Length: 251
Image 1 (cartoon, one colour):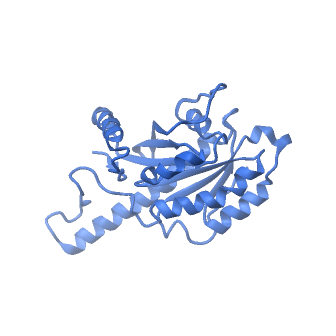
Image 2 (tube, helix red, strand yellow):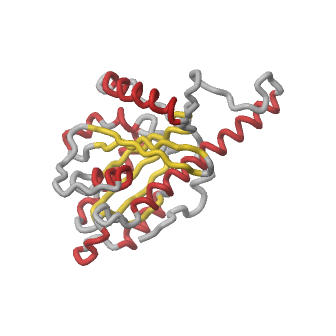
Image 3 (cartoon, one colour):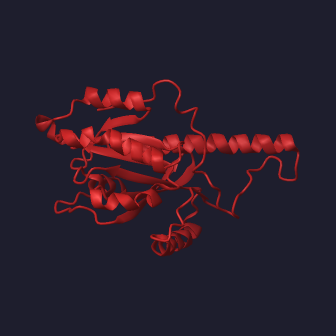
């Protein structure tokens, strides 16, 4: 049975999210998924969040893409360390008038892609604000990848890669520049984030098995399942991930 991050029961999204999750659950029963990881993609409007999502999940680029209205998600299933992992990636609108509802969508996220446009300095200057909002609304254990999008437009660069590396190191984020247009580094960035999330979940599962064995209960040696078959993994500790410099930077 798949392992889940928790999802919001906020009434503003409950009906829609519940319907989508029911469809996902039915699909997963036939697909044999080991884990479902919720990831949010955040950042200013028009930095290319939807384009990055489309490139990773469908290997597509939308030339006529417009600003996302509201929130939607796409999925992609991969095999990582012999486990089938479904990445459920939420595209949150960056426009200011929608930010009041984003707290409901941060909830239960295990990872975040924080995107800025390397050709627009203001989008990078706002990254610190997005980090603050993320930490105010998401669990402290969330893994974050900072992405400088539009690396194919290097001749129009307004943000030095060194500035982003410095910020990522200060904040304990992973960092990469990428291009949704060419696809360069998009796959690698998402996979790196998924690897970090999976590592945390795996360590927590091992810890649970050890604790059960010490307790000597009837379930010794097995992972305790919460809420039936859905195990809450969004609260996993990631202190082991966040020791030292973890920028993992690439450009």
